[in-house]
Amino acid sequence: MSRLLVFTLFGVLFINISCERCKTCRYSYTETVIVETPDGEEEQKIEHENLILINEDGSENAQECIKRSEYKSYDDPNEAFTIENDYLIEQETTDLDNFLFECVDS
Image (cartoon, rainbow, N blue to C red):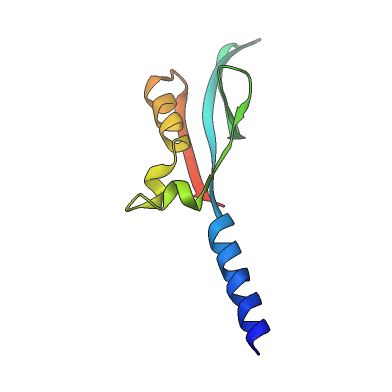
């Protein structure tokens, strides 16, 4: 019985220390293009969905994972993530039409 208790305690401790929380973000926008037709110019809207921001170094900024030891000091663990701020900055500075993003815990 004591072995079972020791292994259970060890398992709970291991899971508690090694747990990570992840946040995944994607964005979408609408592109407006002018198309030449026999009747003149027409405006077309193209929807781009489920896109990922690219960092300055060319890597994708789609998911951020934080270990429990890093986020446990925050009152709200969501404050530990910086990925949502990256998408907010892009939303404020972009000239894309209807730039929308969504971040979900994963």
